[in-house]
Image (cartoon, rainbow, N blue to C red; front, side, top):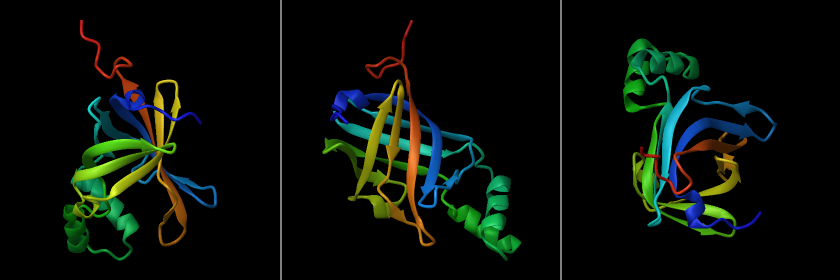
Length: 164
């Protein structure tokens, strides 16, 4: 694969799919198939990502918690839902760089304080007006997974929206 240039990323991207690819071949959509999010890359070398499931209301989060936390009573699952467990929103920003066929997001600000100062490494692939980003293999506790995010470019190739 040819090394991309920063200008290949510049612009606004809309999230199409967020999935986990397990080592046994299973594909999981942790937020369901309805997701929303935007990824922005600036010509100055900055990036910003915000994404979540479409359904973020308390009732939906509570139902997910009851399914994912066996034995959770009403008060415990409500407390967990308010704390954002399971994680249902990702937001971070910082500089980005390209190196050896990967893109590195240098996190300067994040919804998750433990991400600040740490690089978020992603393998990338362009296909037409789509960009797929994949994490390196992650040990998830029960197995190993790769998180994959598929994005679609919005606007013109220079990154701006068409203005009439």
